[in-house]
Structure formats: C-alpha cells, structure tokens
Image 1 (tube, helix red, strand yellow):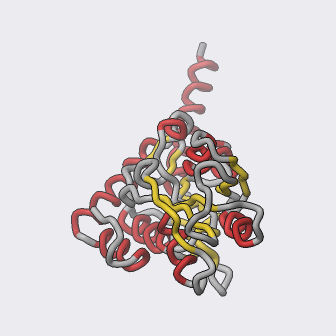
Image 2: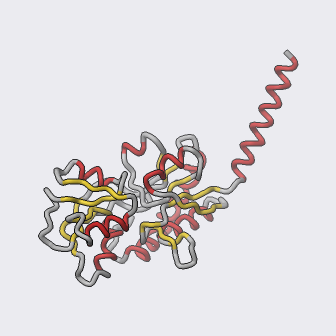
Image 3: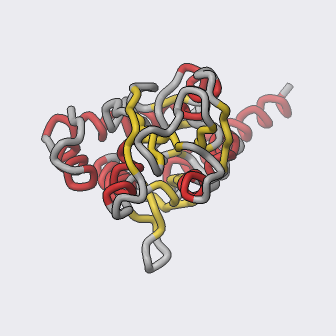
Length: 243
C-alpha cells in the first residue's frame, strides 16, 4: 500500500512538472505559407502575411513564446491533432465538420465572399470544370453544385489549371483571388461571387482548452481596441469586411 501511495505521489509530481513544462514551452504556430495575403513565404524564406503579423501580436498579448511551422494544407488538421504543432492559423474557415475534429477560437476575420475566376467572363461555372484546393469549403461547394470538380494540393496549382485550360474556372477566397486578378493584366476576370462558410479562426486541439482561452482573450482585446480592424485593412484593403 505504501509503495502504491509513493508511486501515486511520484506520478502526481511528474504530472505537475510536465504540466509546468508544457506551459513554459514554445507554442508552435502551424500555417500553410502559400496563401497570400493570409500567409506566404517571403524572399528571406520566412513566414509572412496577415496571419504572421496577427499571430505575433496575439502571442505577445497572451504572453506566449511562439515559433512558426509550415505544413501542406491537405494534412494540416491531422498534423495538428498528432502534435506536430499547437495551432492552425492558415485562413481556415470555421465549419461544423472541422469543429468535430478540432476546436476553434473566435473568428479573427469575418466571413468574406468566394470568387469564381476564369479567363473569360462567360465561363461555364454551373456545368463546367471548376478547380479548387483540396479539403476547402470551396471544393465541397463545387462538388455539390453540379459542376465537375478538379482538386489541387496548392492554391497556385488551381490558378495554373485555369490559365492552361485544364479548368474553366477556379473557386477560392476572394481575398486570395482579387490581387491575382488585379495583377493579371486582363488575363483573369471575376465571373461571380458566392457566400459560403463562416469566419476564419485559429484551430486548436480539443484538449488544449487553456491555450484556446488565451488566444480568445487576445483576439477579443484586438477587436476591442481596433487594432484587428486596422490590420485587416492593411492586408486586405479599406473595403475589406471588418468587426
């Protein structure tokens, strides 16, 4: 009995030390690094964009030490769950399906429209071939729309598919597509827009309720003092939806 008690006490001390270590360890911020202006890799090889600036500020307000990790989009949720990083901050819309697997913070970007973009304004978006990134709300929407869905691992590949004629149009976040259209010298045009999905939030493992609470508080403070709206306008323009 004494050995059992001593073992229990030792386990309790070990658990306490592990818990303290987990709180003092670095929080790994997982992102894709391929979805400007949300996130991208700059010329110095570093994660950059709206979510880099936002994430750094959130970590500062939450008094957390954070480092950035990149991961391909199609495995970004499984690798969060398996512990390869501690958050997802990657332009991920909050959906019921995703919320069954992970938790989300409150949204840090309001819902915004998705755009169909093509090389011609009369592209067939109802019955044609539509490109979308794998495992996105847009790919699910296209699959249910009656059009033929063709999926790609990266957003850049969806644009290439339209340009080379492999797809009639691409459906993606308007915030991502509009700058590309504006810089295409007329090669690409916005055909239509649709409203799908909710706002964008940080993905957190369901077991990390304390970490979620810290980031929720930091996001709320940025909303309250206006710095989040200012950051949204800096990266997405004065016409962007704000809080």
